[in-house]
Amino acid sequence: MSEADARTMMIYDIKKKSMVLAYLFWLFLGSFGAHRFYLGRTGSAIVMLCLSLVSSVLTVVFIGFLGLAVVGIWWLIDAFLVYSMVNEHNLRLAEQLA
Image (cartoon, rainbow, N blue to C red; front, side, top):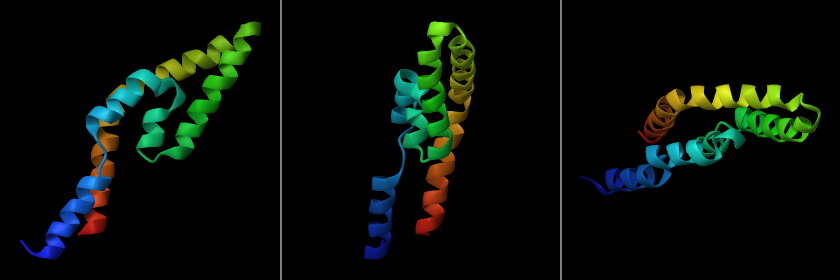
C-alpha cells in the first residue's frame, strides 16, 4: 500500500459518518433534526427543527399538536431512512477521495 493510499484511507476514516451515532441522534434528538444535521442534510434539518419549536409553542392553543404529529411521523419514517442516508454519505465521500 502506498503512502497516498494510506493517507486517503485515513481521511476517509476521519470523515465517514457512524451508523450508531446517526441512530443515537435520531433516537434522542430526532424530533429536532439532529440526525439530519449530522448527516449534512441541513435544509430538511432546519425545517424539522423549526416545525418542532413552533409546534411546541403553539400547543398552548392546541393547533401545535398537528405540527407535532407531522414531526412524529417524519421522525418514524427517518428510522428507515437513516441507514441509507449514512451509506449514501459514506459512498459519496469514498468517490470524492478516489
